[in-house]
Length: 319
Image 1: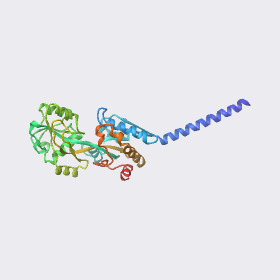
Image 2: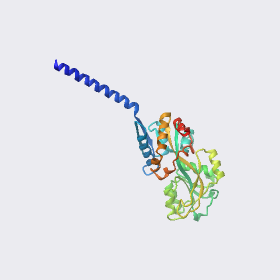
Image 3: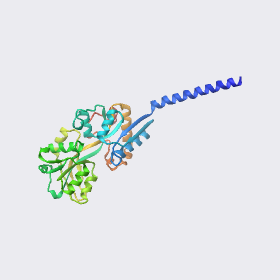
Image 4: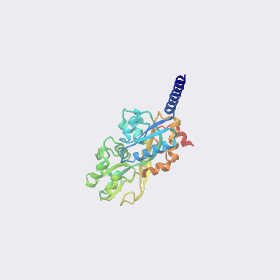
C-alpha cells in the first residue's frame, strides 16, 4: 500500500514536470526572437555598428536574441536577405536600389523582399587627384587616366553616374578598374591621374596618399548634384569639411550614398517598430560604436531611403 501510494505520487510529479517543461518549451518558442544581423568585414565600419545594434536589441526587447555576423558586406548581405539566412543587414542604399529594381550587378536578379528600417550615415563619393596634376574639376577628366573602382562594384557605378552628369563616358577617359587600395598606389606612382573612392571620410586609402603627396578633392556642383538626385534617388548632398585631409584646406561640395539598415518582409510591423524604437532610444550607444556612427540620427533616418520602409519603422518616424 505504501509503495503503491509512493508510485502514484512519483507518477503525478513526473507528469507535472513534463507539463511544465512542455509549457516552457511552447512559451520559449513563441516569445524568443532570434535575429541575425549581417554586417561586413571585421576591420570595417559595418561590423562594430552591427555588434552595437545586437547588444541594444538584446537589452531593449524582451525575448530578443540578436547577433551580428561578419560577411562580405552589401552585395553578399542582400543575397543573404533574399535567401532568408539573415533578418537584418547593413547595406549601401544605392546597391539596395539596384537590387529591388533589378539593375547594375542585380540585372535580371531582382530582390523583392527588402524593407527599409533606417538610413544610417553617408558614404561619400570622393574624387581624388594630386595637386600636381593641375586637375580642378570633373570636366577636366576628359582624356585622363581615371581609377573608377573595382569592376562591378558600387563605387564603379557611382563613378559612371557622376561622369555621365558631366557628359563624360568611358569613351572619353582611360578607365582603370582598381580597388581603393590599388587606386591609392596608382595615384602615388603617377599611373593614374584621378580616382573615385566611395567611403566614409576621412578614408584610410586617401589618408595614405596625403602622407607623401598634396591631394585635391574635386567638387560636384549643386546643379549636377540635383540632376543626379533626380535620376538616382539614393544620392544625398554632402559637404566634405576643409581640413578633412592633411594639406587640403577647402570645403568641397559632394554627394553621398547612405549606409542603411534593411530587413526582410518577414520582419512584421510590430517587430519593425520595436527594433527602430530600441535603436533610436539608445542612439548614444550606437554612436559610440564607431566614429562614422556619430552621424546616425532620427532626423536623417529617411535621407536617401531607396526602398519601401517597414510599416513599423514608418510608424515610429511619424511619432
